[in-house]
Image (tube, rainbow, N blue to C red):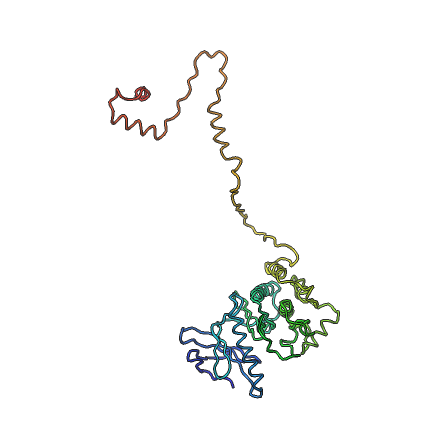
Length: 363
């Protein structure tokens, strides 16, 4: 049974209006009356026909989603504020984003430009690398689970996430995920791995730039059969993103593109370059000033040379001109500031007869 609008959850979160629906429940825009802020609340709907064992499994999966998401602090991972158990089911309280899903963007505006798709992929890959570092596998990367704002791409819905050390709550023989976005090795029964999430990311980006899924099949098995037929994956709009997609969508996970190399290639494409070529600075009409850092390890070779040259020039004695019988008069060096100050003090404090000889000569 779905909660009505205005329902007060945990005596704190007021449900205002639904902002999204899926097979597992509804996402509400709600107001946190304690902290006076708007939040998103995920309500899990449990069909009444389920037996107690399946209901317990779905509840455990939702609680695990909240725990898995809360473990990761990353700008491209949805932030979880709270997990509440009420009415014998869990609710997840998350940050509320003014965003549309990647699936909605494709439906409303058509295929994305390869550069924009690459930037979204770069950010989502950063989220996957962050969750993989915590021992978490998402297992359900797809366009509807990617939220896009003006400056962020955020990975959501960790309902199928797997944590290292947790006991599996999935029934034997059942593969969880969305057809067309499940890695081939998972369809064949292999254990989920980070490479499987990378394959799902590649399938998501393929849909983003091509405007359609990899196979258009309704089941994961049919999608796998289409992919393993030996025919190359058709790409007509991927452009510079094609090498990245081809490397991410390899059937064998051992030869699939790793996350470090994928991040580098996506960054190059997002910056307007080629996935296989290094980034080069863009040409512009303005002169580019290059700032170099000073070297601190060794003293520059030119330091002190001008002093040495000046000293050598002062000490050099020019050769006398022919026929010159007069003694050369050396120019008197200008007194220093301290010498002038000292002379002034002496003149003011001592009679003339006690002045130094040089000072008496100067008058």
